[in-house]
Length: 108
Image (cartoon, rainbow, N blue to C red):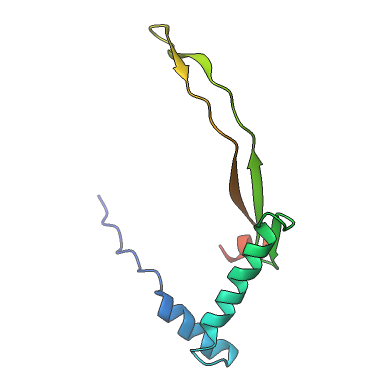
């Protein structure tokens, strides 16, 4: 049986910020403000008054999905024994879906 190679550790937050700072020419203190601004824009777009869709060009599309309420129902819990039980109701909720775009898929 062959041994697996040790997995590389993912980059830490400070390493990511340092790499972005060197690539873009920004200072290390300016990079977190860029991410805060991006987070604020995503929050505005996905919030109650927003469009429900935010696209990071070439990377991903972030969408708010409204899931309707589901009523309680009786269902077969074990199909082999035929035991019937109650499935509780679920309230309406909001979910977030992130869809990769062509640019992100091409990186993999």
